[in-house]
Every structure is written in C-alpha cells, then in structure tokens.
View 1 (tube, rainbow, N blue to C red):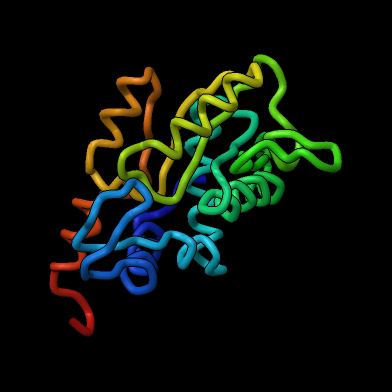
View 2 (view 1 turned 90 degrees about the vertical axis):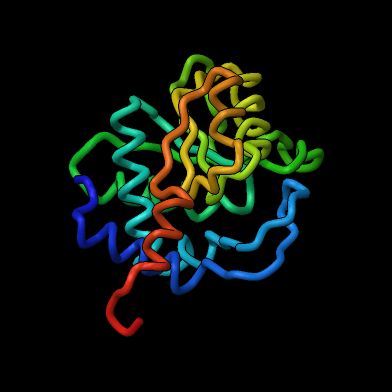
Length: 194
C-alpha cells in the first residue's frame, strides 16, 4: 500500500528533524557540502523504518524486484525494513541481502551477507543518500557480476548533485523517495512551531 500524504509528511519531518544538518561537511564522495544528511537517523527510527520500508517495497513490487540489497552500512536497515514489510502484508515477498565492503575470506566467504543473488534474479539496489552515485553503482556492478539482473536503484534522498545523471549514464533507472529540492523547500516553509 502506498504511503498516504500524511505518512509522507511524517517521513519528511523525521528526515528534517533528525537527519538533516546545516554546516560544512566532507562527504563520502570527497566533496564538501553546506548540509549533511545521515539517513540512518531515519532508517533506524521505528516509524522511519516502517515508512521507508513501505515506500521502497512499493517501488520494488512496481519494478518486479524479488530482492533488495545495498552497500553496508547505509542500506542495512533499509533492506531489512523492506523484507519485513513484505512479510507483514498480503503481497509477494521481497527478500534482502547486503553487499559487503569487500569479499569475506573466512567462514563460507562471499561478497554478500544473507541469501546471495541468483542468476537472472530481478534485484533492486538501495542506499540512504545519493550524491555522486559511486556507492550505488559499485553495489549494482557486484550484483550484476553475480548474474542477477538489476531492475532499478533506489535512494531515500537524492542530493541532486550529479548522482542521478551518473546512474542513468550507466544504464540504470533511479527512484528517490525524496529529493534535496523537496527537503530544502520544506525546511524553509513556515510550519507548526516554526
């Protein structure tokens, strides 16, 4: 079931109140930014986890994904939320796995935590924020190298700093729950208590 307008507003408020900061920040991409977004402060919140899980589950089902995955650590709570939400409703189940930072050399080893992708399996790749697209693209390449078919890339926040263009130039579609423009527009608009 898609998020209602009220639920989208609740998720947006969580993002603004908990995860969005203004200042001078060095990002994973190496770029400097006047704001910072820590998606885990939303995706590890009980209500945030539920709403993000439902929003991404809707995307995954629309795109025919049988599983979602993403680079550890930002995607870990997101893919778990999607899998859990799919188990709680009446629709098809969507599995989850994590793309490790590197290949695990001990135990059973491997590049993935959880049930690994299978050849031809339709998979969506997720991350909490998109800046340059490097993390999402690297995870997608590893999933494709395992033989799975990447159907789409998802993000909680598209920072609108060239990542979408880079993802699309690599032949992938991108879907974002929110964009930087939406986040900034709402942070500047008058609202209750502001």
